[in-house]
Image (cartoon, rainbow, N blue to C red; front, top):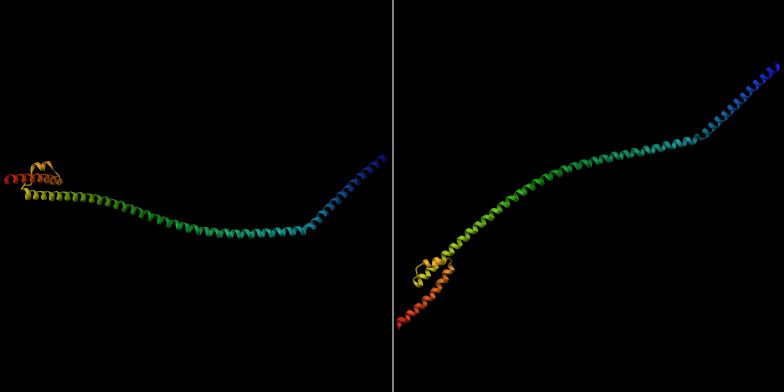
Length: 200
């Protein structure tokens, strides 16, 4: 029994010793790992600081560029607003000019229509005057030629004016004159025959 108890005690001591050794090994390994990590962190710290500073500078430059671009956009927006206002004013002026042109166009069309109406009236009046003038001319001409024929007939042959058969047969003055000339030759021939008979 004493031997068994001693062996059990030894076994328990061995187990505790093994556990302590394992714990000590793990502690040292963890400590070494932590020291290594901290050492690496301390060594890389200046590089990280420089990288952070470079990134900060880049961010500042980018922010400055964005501010400049924002100011340019604000300036462009202001210019666009000015151009828009100018375009609106020009559009209003063009609308006014267009309205004036339309009004002048309507007035011109009205004047053209009025002139066309006056021209038509003048043409109608001109045609009417020409017709009246033509009728007066032919009436006067007919009267003059009729008077001349009357005087010629009375002066040469003692023929009274207004023979019914000639008047009903001829309407134009030229035809009357031609007929009188033909009868004049016949009358001259008859007069010569009468004279020769009286002499004989």
